[in-house]
Image (cartoon, rainbow, N blue to C red; front, top):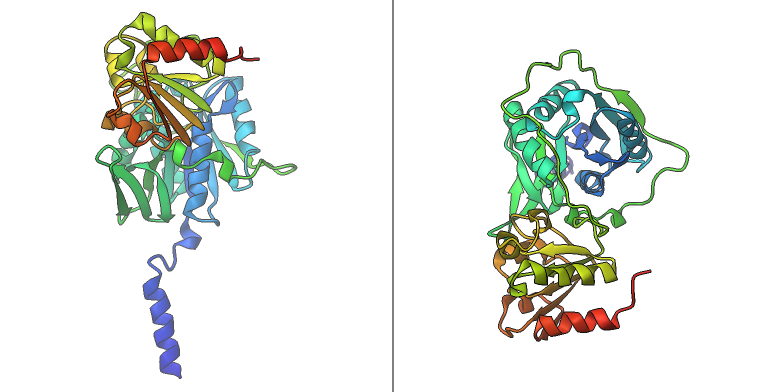
Length: 353
C-alpha cells in the first residue's frame, strides 16, 4: 500500500512538468499608452499574462513623463483585478519609443522585481525594445505568440502562418514573450474593478544612467490625419490591393471606409506602388489584424498578406480573377470588377451616422 502511494506521488510529479512553478510565477507587462489611456494591444498582453496562470501577479510598466503618464497609470490600475501593481518610470528619456533607454529600464526593473515572465505586444514598439532587453538579460525571446498552453509552453506561427510551432522554454528567467494582440482578445476578460485598484509605484531611477543614449536619437513623428478608426483595433477593415491600379483609384477604398466607419488597409504591393502610406499595410511585414469584418478589393491573396488577416471573423473578397488565392480564406467571395462594385456600394450604402 505504501509503495503504491509513493509510486502515485512520483507519477504526479513526473506528469507535471512544472511541480513548483505556480508559486514562482510573476509577470511584468511592458505597456504603451497614448492620450492618458493604455493602448488595447497592451491590455491584450494582460490577457496573455492571465493565460500563463490564474495565480499570476501582474505588474504593468509604464514610462514617459507628464500628466498623461499619471492618467494612464490610473487607467491601468483599475483595468482588471489580476493587476497587482503599476510601475511608473517618469523620465524624459522614456518619452519616445527608443530601444536603448527602454531596454535599460526593463533590465533595471527585472533586477529589482525578479519576474518569471516579461510580456509585450508584437507592435513596432514591442518588436523594437524586447530583443534588446532580452540581450541585456542574456535570454532568448519568443516572438509572435498566439497561444499560451502553460508557463513554459507556447505556440507561434512559422512559414508565414502556414504552420504552428510549439515551443517549450527551457532557459533561465525571465521568459520574454511578444504576443499577437489579436490572439488574446479583451472580450475574454471581465470589466475593471469597482472599488479596488492596483497600487501605483514610482520606479527608482537613481541608478538609471542618463548618459546611455545609445546610437539612435529621436527625430520626429509623422502620422496620417484621418477620421478612420485605428487599423489595429478596428471592427471593420476595407483593404485595397494592386488591382486598384493607382493612388487616385485607391481613394475609392477610403470613401467606402468612411461610409462604413471602417479602417483602411492595404497590401504590400499597393504600398510599394505608392498608392497609400506604409502604416496601412496589412500582412506579415505590416500589421496583424483580426476585425469582425474584413473586406478585400483587388487583393490577390499573397501568402504574406493572408498571414496578417486570416484570423478575421468574416472575410469578404472581391476580385475579377476567380482563381485568386484570397477566395480560399474568404467566407464570401464575389468575382467581379471592383470599379463597378465599389461605386454601386457607395451609391446604395447609407451615410455613416
